[in-house]
Image (cartoon, rainbow, N blue to C red):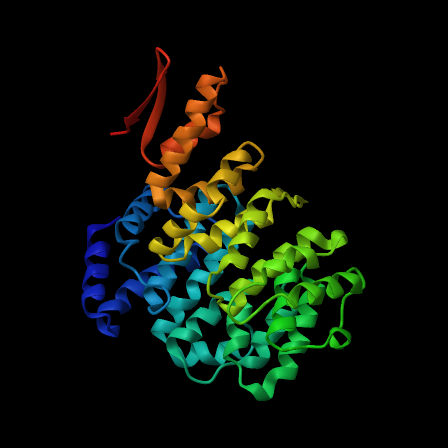
Length: 388
């Protein structure tokens, strides 16, 4: 990237004021506009330089509090989508990336435009700039956009005044119709059941969601305690909606921001080893991906304690060849945070395989690589070699 532009960002980062950020925002807004208007990407050398630049500042930016940083994050997504030859995603992220820069340069005009049309990134922008929020256009967006981020929507619902509770319920019920992904629908239903304390008969369901699934969720909800998940929850899971109920309870953990206890840990163990497979555009294993996401963001000392006292690592290796690639990558990225525990369990497995004349699958080599090692077998011995 042009050194002058890099210097401009560094000056902005030092002061974070309008004077130092204006030229930077104008440059990117013009770049995005030209890309959209002419349907032609900037030179590949510029895009390569931008990715290198973004990677150099990635650990220091804060897109949750800074408009320039948010715009850079969204523009990076557009560039990566372009590299992946995903034109729809590229167009989406280009439109998203323009808005933080517009808000930075002319907040008044930006606010007026949001009363007419609303996009996903606008939730994050308004979290940064505050002020009057365009609830009507925001809720219209959520009700009509099939791909609206459901977790972002829940964060927005939590911020709404109690006197708008009815509109929240209507919006969620509309999202249940527009969203076709069952896991996303379960997220929304969980929020209604837990947060708005809706009665079973008060929730309006789309024709393709059966009331018996809702009944199964209410049965599972009875096990959610203020201090933990009842260890007897397994007995309450509907055989007809077993996987969906597990996912409902994972959503309950996340939405209530529950403290981790024995019941929740047992839920994690079941979810890492039970295979709910959804055939969408890709094959999805939502239970494993959700558990990986939950564990990834808990404190390291808590994760270490869980992995030492639970069956999670044992169950991970028991099922290592059953995970699809995205689920495996999510899990191994999280478990490798505690690399010594992952390495210890993996070594036990590998030594047992050697004793029984078995060969490890490529997944073991991938696990070793995730913590910076290569594994080799020489003269009946297992060797760990650090990757330099």
